[in-house]
Image 1 (tube, rainbow, N blue to C red):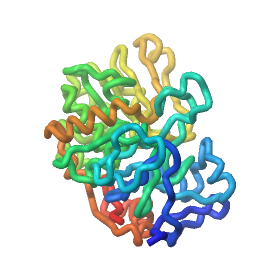
Image 2 (image 1 turned 180 degrees about the horizontal axis):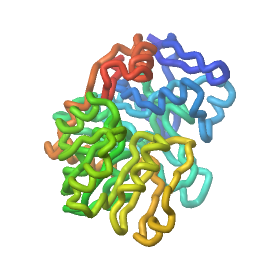
Image 3 (image 1 turned 135 degrees about the vertical axis):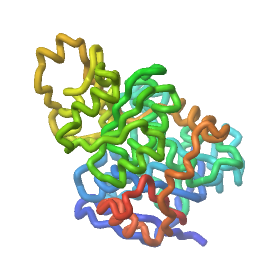
Image 4 (image 1 turned 180 degrees about the vertical axis):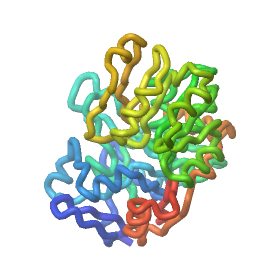
Length: 353
């Protein structure tokens, strides 16, 4: 068999379809991975609807104008290319990092060490396919006890909020954490904030179903941002001091503005969800008087994925409840529609080739 099924997006027309294409052949330093699970992320939807475009597309994408989405990928090593030195033998279970260094600058040693990383499924072909190419330095072994679907979502749905919480937000035990948006990123943010000892953890989401899920995922409070007594509810939950570290995982301007109004002294707002909307601070004098901060955040680094694989493998975090549904790769367009319309309010949909 020389062909495979793959989701293909034409970047000029933004038309997406699952097609039969040639199976790629690994070049020097590359490994061909047989995909066992691939997550469907909101950024994949943004790529398909045109609100997101490749940042630094590789030459093959520039020439063809077509790309295979998918940056959350797990599978087994199928074929090893020339000059691969990492001991990646066929059959080895692996998860793929969500991107790789561009290699164009002296400091480009790892995915996020460079200011211009390449994103899998955005700048080069991703994992919505039966097989995917991966540079050997972007592979991470996974233990037999970690299911492929759970491993696949770690490199973004879990590692992005993890990096936001432990690094950008630098959350410490007993700090009050507010999480705006209890979807694909925020639901994991709730669990991870609890894991590092934040207390209380306050989830904020306008959807009743998302608030119910937030409580199941470990939030101490789940608040409706549209409620008239919202600010008072935050004051009550935090014993009057306000939120120490707030996270926008929704990528909504109104959420960011609201978060700044309930920060406590020295409070920090971390912008983890992506949106072109501006950040508005209603009272900048009060913001400065309380020495508050706003910090940008993007993605994660390879060590975050490695740490999370260890945490999942040892049972410190159970990602099973995060898998909302398994969908055949051939029905990838249906998965896109489900996530776009929030049908069933999923945390993560996973494609199975």
